[in-house]
Image 1 (cartoon, one colour):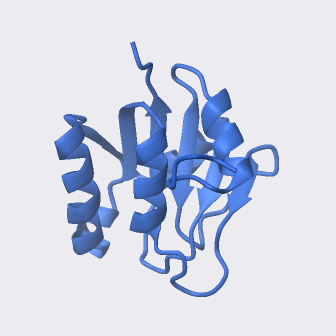
Image 2 (cartoon, one colour):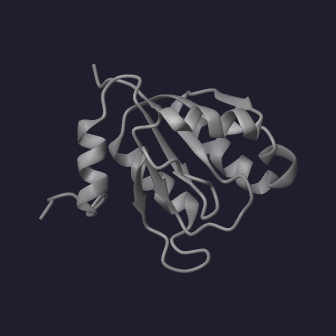
Image 3 (cartoon, helix red, strand yellow):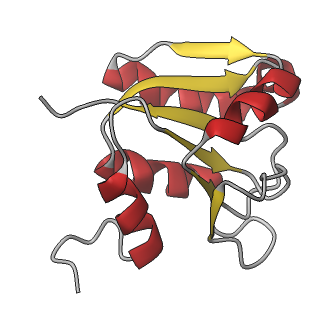
Length: 134
């Protein structure tokens, strides 16, 4: 058992440990389509559970992130969620790249893994680009 209380899930812990500089990990809502070749780490167990922001915070506690991409549609469709996401990356000093959702889905096909929440808020998805700790 891990000593830390952040990431107890062995699959998520492994993927974060194996992630190298510029690798992509996407944290998703319950509805984002995930390509078959992208490893799926599915935490969803009922609508809204676990919440997207809780899962995002867990990943951010473990992973060094140098870049983040979000679907531009979230700004108008789910502004409260965008504000929450933006606040997290503002604290880290990371600017959010906004792109159309269709491009977001294309880009995520290159992700190492997709970490799926039970979130039902539209466009609650972030593509994280791994940084390095040194």
